[in-house]
Image (cartoon, rainbow, N blue to C red; front, side, top):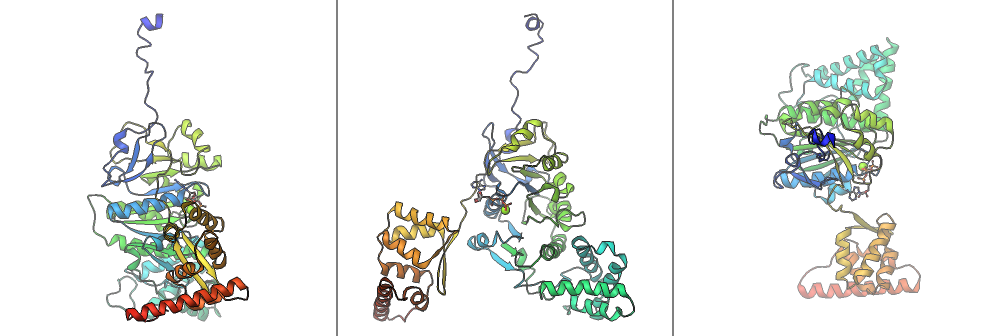
Length: 505
Ligand SMILES: Nc1ncnc2c1ncn2[C@@H]1O[C@H](COP(=O)(O)OP(=O)(O)OP(=O)(O)O)[C@@H](O)[C@H]1O
Ligand SMILES: [Mg+2]
């Protein structure tokens, strides 16, 4: 009572704001920002707006299955629609290629396509030499062998000079550029005099042998990489080091391109570069991931770095990224690493242990400093339904259809809602791939005729030969299937002739 009378209680704030940013930090017009979900406590919608942030870079961490790639795919889908942004995805594990194809983008497969590491791509021979040697240092133990490092550097420069290229001038007219094969030959020539040169030559040879021709000739249209939605699928390269070398080389090219872009004082983002699970290339100070984080904003380039383990992401990325999403992290050492770069309270530390899939602690660095919390929990990333391809295989037949489209087609074959979702569940249980025989028996037991199943598979692109291979084995039912198919084919032929059309393949 005495405290109340003295006014001491009155000066205390009983109703304090929950620890969430002010709504003006979170809300923006949907036409100029990306909606990602609601805050956990006050259910305020969060619209990601690059103009309100110090920069458009995004860092994402969380254990496997916590929702990192789902966030990236949803984010990129909306960024393309809202900002008309381009996106280049460096795909280490091959987990984006199917989605990119379905989203109408382009997939470049490293291994099938290649990139000459000594391709100048707008840079000078001297700068490219340094970049290649630095990449080799980051990915191998070359740094511990200074003489080999120097010999390799000299051999690369000699290879450039031997093609008539100047070390410090960008190439004016298109000229042939050397490859690592020439660098190997130069080191090999010197190896009889110097055992260190022999060792350096051995390194390059190992690289050439393990990568096939992937690093010797450029078949990837480098300018095409920065147009629209592009995924560079690195997973067919045989080792993590080779994948990282390819990733680093592409980033070097992106950096050169970035520096030639006009300065964008108005902010906004024209290109997102996605580096998901790039544990070797986001941890090193010399990596171009860090150059893009430092310089990207002024050219409208945003980088999205994702990792299961935050200690694989260099601290300067955490402390410089405008937005950080921390999905569930189980190890306290990892949480401590993040917390030493970002400041957040024990309250968040406690909640972040038990977050479910899609829930994230978000940290924002605003362009205009505001005196209010910069962290909040995003209840669940409210993303795009992900497209999945369902595959139907058998014999030489291998056809694909997007899952939702398959659902619609099953209904149009006359199947009930329940039967068609049972068939879709069967696809889900078998990693979205079913044998054609199993698929047709499911359809037939749901009421479809064999003829309609065959016609459906034909529409997906199965040829008569494929279908015969699947259905014309010795079982009586199969014979019937083969006959039904041939009957149907004859009918089609008749129909086509009467329309004046030819036979389908
Ligand atoms: N916000 C969400 N809403 C609905 N489903 C989600 C959400 N986030 C993730 N998922 C689903 O959870 C699964 C795992 O998500 P995702 O692939 O994004 O995990 P990840 O963190 O990238 O894992 P990894 O590190 O192994 O690549 C996916 O099937 C995805 O569709
Ligand atoms: Mg992932």
